[in-house]
Image (cartoon, rainbow, N blue to C red; front, side):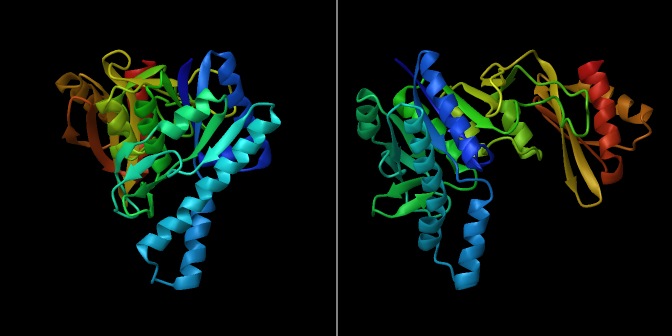
Amino acid sequence: MKIIIIKFGGSSLADPDKIRRAAAMTVASRRRGFSPVAVVSAPAESTDDLLSLASLTAGDCIPPRESDALLAAGEQFSAALLAMAIEAEGKKAVSLTGSQAGIRTDNRFSAASVKNVDTRRLKKEIRDGRIPVVAGFQGISAGGDITTLGRGGSDLTAVTLARALGAALTEFRTDVKGIYSAHPAIVPQARKLKNISYQEVIALARLGTDVRQLRAIDYARKYSIPLHLRSSFHDEPGTMVTATGGKPGVSCLSVKKEGVSALVSLIGRGLGAKHTAAAARAAASAGVSAAAEKITSTAISFRASAAEAETLIKALHAVFITG
């Protein structure tokens, strides 16, 4: 049976109803012909709560080793609760820490790198008919210490396990339906993208859009791991991330506010002088003063005032997406 990695973000595990919904989605993947392995983040806000508790307890004197030991607990809460919910759905499940799942790292606390994955335990659980639920964001060093993989590290756990297990697909389930051509709160006409390339997602992340952990996307690109970014609350298709993505040209827009100014960017493939010129004309027509600042084949960025950023992004969306 083909393996699917299903990673649930913290907002998808914020309360018992959402955990039960995640369990139902995990079980449903078996009816789609997959053998699921779930990877979980800590419940929404719990990591920040643990950091606050540490600060109140120890002030600024928080040893990195103890910080990692504390923060890893959040994902372990999620893993145990989701495994319980899957059992309540009538399927066998087992929660696993990063160490139990065989994730071996270096000893850089708070930003560890995965060195290798011992898949023996995971494969045995799958053979025995159990659904493994892995606590993301964590592993274990050669010295036996708990380590964490950096903010958003559950994404890296998911793609690392996908490669180690030879998964056919990796799904990232979150509170959004996919990647859109612009932020829908700014541009109501924004469209959900069916396909996008790894390089475009990396550009989005670097230019201010909170998409996925950069290290995870770069890892997926390096090993050609297909990703499906979709909702935890709907079954409709989301956005597929692959090497090729969609059609060449502008696929989406991002905005990154930096004090009194903002960087508004066109993201796509095969971008060049004609896209820069068309964007400059759109800015002038909208009455926005904008100067091209960064130009690559995947991103063209314009500097404008923060007050005019939304006007500019709407104008560019009309020209490149809806026009």
